[in-house]
Amino acid sequence: MTPDQVLADVRVMLIDIIGAEYALGLDISMATTFEADLELESIEFVKLSAMLTEHYGNRIDFVGFLADKSLNEIIDMTVGEVVTYIAGRIDATTAVTVDA
Picture 1 (cartoon, one colour):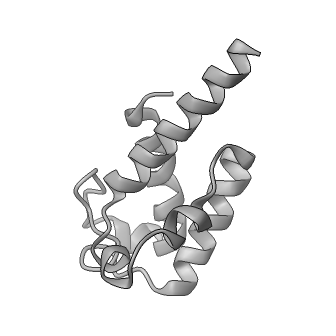
Picture 2 (picture 1 turned 45 degrees about the vertical axis):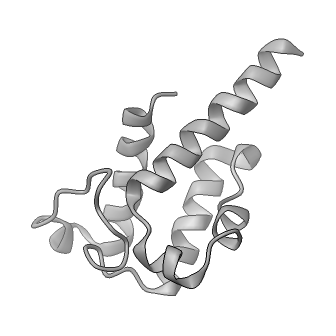
Picture 3 (picture 1 turned 135 degrees about the vertical axis):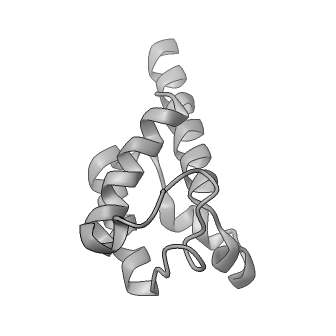
């Protein structure tokens, strides 16, 4: 799965979380920040985590991904960081499945 495909998936999830009306004025890209641009609250991160798990299954561990970050890193995190993590995890699990 390419980063562009993952970005499209994450963009749909984020629009669902923040609301289509709020998202109208936004261009959710790899450079979009969760805190400054999207103004995501912690409960909305929980919802994003649940949506990612529902969509990608156990191929990703979003909670574990966040746990490795400091509070400042989470505050400054971009959509691109999440997309890159997911794309990398999917590629890694696909490679293991294909090799098995």
